[in-house]
Length: 422
Length: 109
Image 1 (cartoon, rainbow over the protein chains, first blue to last red):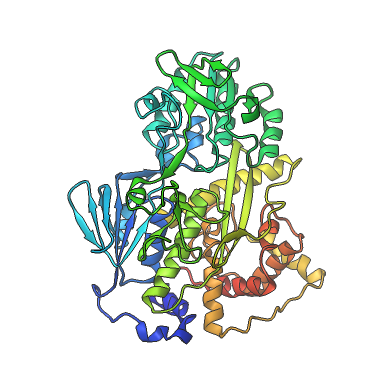
Image 2: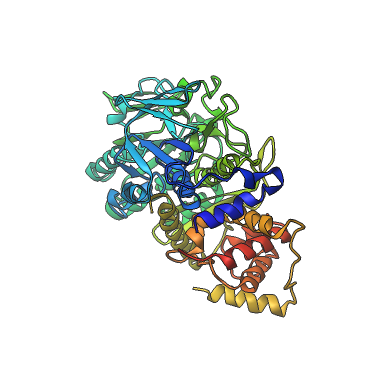
């Protein structure tokens, strides 16, 4: 389903003369799409374009040879499976005819339509899609910088940080204190810190039952809170304490030399400290001024084209996309909408709004999961929740229900990563 | 894998749910492309071309009536759903019909 479906797709714009703008035949004749970032946004977009148009010249610049997914990386921390299970190569993407370049994109020249890399390469483009994910804000917590993260890992960009945090948990004595410190919204994967607490609790309960987890939270509530609390009371009674913002939960300072984590009123001495600092858009987007000083990139809510710079599209965690959360699933949905918009624009027609979905499964032990599903309606000025209420799995659901959701979470992960990496 | 959908089909039939929801006023091709755009949101869970790995049902190439009845029943809060009842309520009947059109016609590569 390559050319045929694209033809069907652009036929929606036939009234606008789309058929006149079909690209000429010939392998190298297609427009150049350059993608920065090979995660849930960028990989999905590149693969989607390849599947729907054999002629587009697609280059994807990604800094790492392999991609480790943040979704399901909490299972590595809980000892459910090794990091290899959440690590993907770009080999199949390359075999599909996408030019994957292992390098770091550093500078955009929007006038010349080129992107320079740290490795000294230069790539021209007709359409540029940025999906650089997040960067961590090293100024957010006193004493917490990249060096401190080697002692108190954030593990919020999956990979070596995930392995480090897992090793620390394995080395910890029974009876140790684990602190998990989420930032204030908006940040990547809002249910992530609480799923992480759950799966670390799963490991501690089995191997180090005298240990304890304290979540020092910069917020007073969190997504799926009732479902998490219900699961914790049932599965991990007394093991997880949650300290909200209003009870001095917000971490303001750390000292790695004494392993001290401080809020405005209390000092904690954890054996393992998982500090998750505030975040902002990837540096290349900020250097290009696409965030307008806010830390996040405003986009057209139908095409995902930057509000600041024509011809540059931004998807995934770096965006402020209406009411969509920063999640891998959201980035996948956005990538397809953005790809459709680019295909329509190439064909000379106007991007058409559709609907977007986000689903976030949280697994709290291997056979127990629940989710939140968000249905979004795209309009010219917003991506709004179609229905704000009753978005989560029900409370007091049966064990069988939670087992089905755990199975579906695994099925989702297999399917979405296949969509990305082949 | 289709057993749940099949049960819903029976349920839908027994409840006398509408079996033929009128399409939109869009031309056929545009309607199909609208179904495809809507369907893009489905494949993250249900797999490329609706071909799923694991417990989530495959929906690509499934009979249109079976798909539509399942979606309509989910929207009505009926059927054996974990999540689909909450998803389906966000879609108009025409959108559900467009989805059924699209996925029933998808050919896996």
